[in-house]
Amino acid sequence: QVQLVESGGGLVQAGGSLRLSCAASGTIFSINRMGWYRQAPGKQRELVAAITSGGSTDYADSVKGRFTISRDNAKNTVYLQMNSLKPEDTGVYYCNAHAVRIPLSYDYWGQGTQVTVPS
Image 1 (spheres, helix red, strand yellow):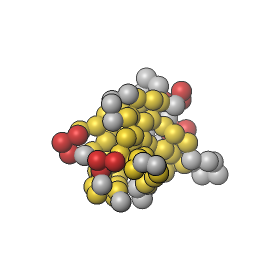
Image 2 (image 1 turned 90 degrees about the vertical axis):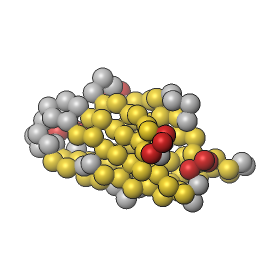
Image 3 (image 1 turned 180 degrees about the horizontal axis):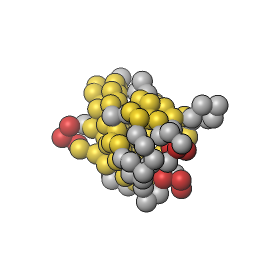
Image 4 (image 1 turned 120 degrees about the horizontal axis):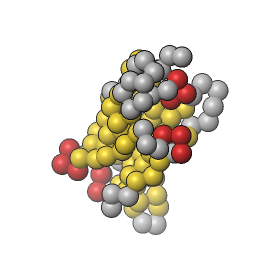
């Protein structure tokens, strides 16, 4: 099992910045990818950014150049630095951990943290 605890959401004016944190615990050795997803009201959950155990990153087109995903292996924590925030970035942000224990894979989710950017 993997447990994820998120923090760092809040209300910020357009153009501002926030940093989200996601601390992982449990069978973290099995995690090969962690990411952040968001869900806006009435919309499907979408990938925002992800980082693999090898350090490769992936971003949604809408956040490229504004958001940066990083990790601190010593703290088992993944961060999402969000700059130049826009109203369309509003939503609940969920941390995800993708774990592999051959032959199965598992997805774990945090409880979500609200990010609000008023228009």
